[in-house]
Length: 393
Ligand SMILES: [Fe+2]
Ligand SMILES: [Fe+2]
Image 1 (cartoon, rainbow, N blue to C red):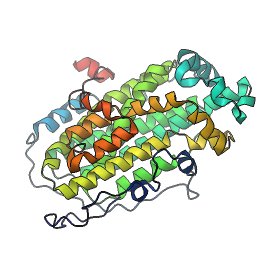
Image 2 (cartoon, rainbow, N blue to C red; image 1 turned 30 degrees about the horizontal axis):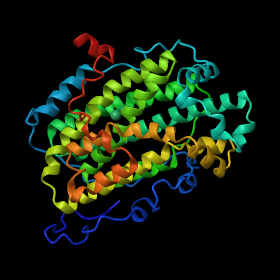
Image 3 (cartoon, protein in one colour; image 1 turned 90 degrees about the vertical axis):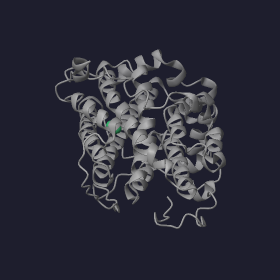
Image 4 (cartoon, rainbow, N blue to C red; image 1 turned 180 degrees about the horizontal axis):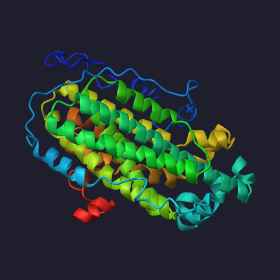
């Protein structure tokens, strides 16, 4: 994260003149350095909690005129009608047999969930029996839902912070509905983990770094950029894939409801930032570009699932071998950036500073998504997701 003060005289444009190198931004030169990524594994804090200093000034506004930001006002009205109840709108009586789900999911999605014999040759995975592969699949489920739960708590804290810091009343109102949404998301993922799965994982180390940066930044728009645009943009795509791939009906429905909320959240980020970013100086925009790149890499790094490999006692060299032998998995992960890239384009961040961020996403292989519709146009994409929305439609 950069620390340039908002009051910097940007006309002279000195401190942020140069965009920083990969080494300065993400601690390594090569974004695909798997060994560096795998060396950083999430652990539970021994105290049982994690505290991050929050440096944002809380801002009162005396302009109470509702609707002065019409698009945000519309989103707020929509959010009020779209509330659902995680306890009663989902059928928690559905039994989940994790082993059977692992097998059924792998049969339904061989390209994503089955390993090629050639990819595992010469590694410990070659000696695994069926039961060990099933255990790996179960750990994957536990890990994935744990990361969803931790990420949702990050969203809960960030949105509460936006209520305090954003200057406009319409945005404060909308953010308040998102606080409720995120509380419900933490609640349902936590309930699913506890009642249907078989164990928790700590927050992934790379996701944790990103959330600490977002919470710790003193500028209100960085919370939006980090959470609504980057983390929630990726989550929306990820929920969509898991929703499409899972054969388990309770999780499928749960994700559908959550996605209906997330589509609004990402739209909220784009609507709030698009005007504001037009007023920023070149130096201020460069900082936002760097932050977006750093966030993208942290999120890509977490997809390696370091904590699962460690629990399954697979040596780093073997993890690297199987991952490098299965490049189609990497391609699949890049699809998770399909919501983020068009939104960054809409905000002007792809093209600022001679297209620096465009080059970065080109290197990552994700630039083709820039021509997809941005999230202000598909906030209704999942609008029939919740019972309340169906009734008002
Ligand atoms: Fe959420
Ligand atoms: Fe969200």
